[in-house]
Length: 135
Image 1 (cartoon, one colour):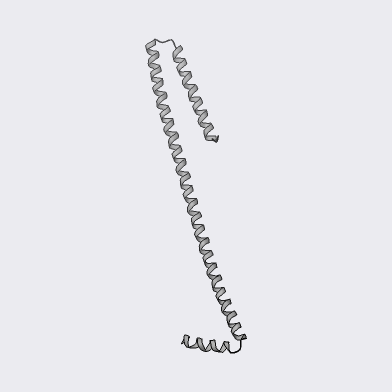
Image 2: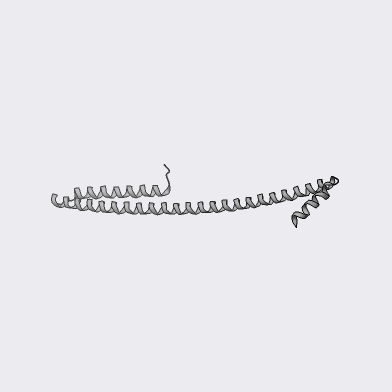
């Protein structure tokens, strides 16, 4: 479990609050009042402490939810950026492959024509055969 600054702050607030409550209860017990008044003060203090604790817990829960939502949004943005970058790279790679295939076809056609020209009689027959197909 990590020990970050926010966790230290919560611990310090909790310790302060606990010390405050202990001091309040001790002061009520040693105050020169009747038992009934003292019990009523303890009840009131307990209710006040409960209400403050509930408010503190609600605030902490709200802060945690906001933090989680922020992290989720940042994660979504990062994922979208990664996906977009991947799509761009995939498209670029596809274009490179198409270009390489086209270059290969051109080179192959050039090599065929050079081979055909180097063999006597083959180059002219291919030219005659290709001419009717193009027409």
